Length: 116
Image (cartoon, rainbow, N blue to C red; front, side, top):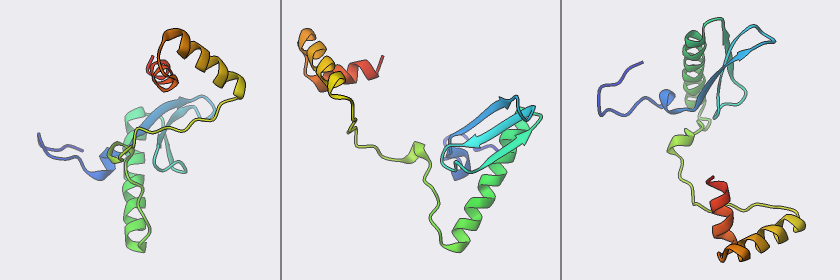
């Protein structure tokens, strides 16, 4: 699947694909983040990718025809930058103390830890 330079890729190409070797199946398994129930097996990793792309295209067509929502590619989603995280009280205390020792607010300290 190709696009000319500067053109937006098709929706199918915008999804997040993964191809990995499956020892159990003794083939490559391709999957797509936005459609967790879909996968494609093939002995060739490139064919596994092409197979899952064709499957996603068919599923999108079916969803569209039936009026059901089509998952938006994660690459096109908007994120607020806000993340609520639940931790144990002990970890919360430890992080607050470490942030204080570094002289920064807890949120800034946690953000620095997550970007390492």
